[in-house]
Each structure stands twice: as structure tokens, then as C-alpha cells.
Amino acid sequence: MNIITTTVSLAVDNVAASSAFFTTHLGFREVMADPSFVSLTRDDAAGDVVLLRRGSDMLPSEQRYERPAGLVLAFTVTGLEAEYRRLRREGANITMPMREEPWGERLVQLTDPNGVVVQLVEWIPPAGVQPLQT
Image (cartoon, one colour):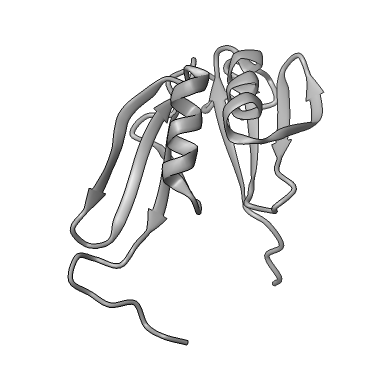
């Protein structure tokens, strides 16, 4: 098996609203769309996101009305401080302001109009630890 990309499929009530959030704030673009779904990608091959309209018969019957619960869609990024400033200027729904954890993680969380939590993470050396020289 050769995995060539990762795709996350999310069932949401308003596909267009989530698509606008991902394209406006996170740099995704639509590659396929239908009233019941949209497929999003990025040119940097970070992974794809498929948004499916909740209740759609495209989903198995036992999953049609499920909502993402407890899910955090995390993307590892570079330049998080600049992205955080940009997102604030754009009025993105930032639900956890940027913070740094002692183990070397800088992160911020956004929430899309359907309640999908997106976390942007940048790994930094923990306080007092020198980065490895390559």
C-alpha cells in the first residue's frame, strides 16, 4: 500500500458555509462540488477535506445524521504568529487564542460556522532546549 494523501470527510449542516470558511481562512480550494458535498484541497498537499451535507444519502444510513463531536482537525503549519494576525484581521472565529505549551507546541483554534474545530499547530523548541543542528 502507498498512501498518497489524507482526506478527512465531515458531515455538516451547511456545506457552503464550511467551504467558505476553509477557502477564505485556510487556503483551500474547491475541486469538486455538488449541493450535497464539496471536495477541498490545497496546492501544498497538506491533506484534503470533504464536506458532506448531513442527512445526505451519500452517507451510510447509520452515519447520515451524525455530527462531528470531540473532533479537532489539526494542521501543522509554519509561521503561525503571522497567520494568527491575518486570521484576526479577517475576522475568523478564533475560539482559542494563540498560546504556547511547555512541551514545544504553539497553537490556535478556530471554529467554522458548523462547529468544526480547526487547530493550527507550530512546533517550537521547548523553553531552555536548544534545537538540534543538522
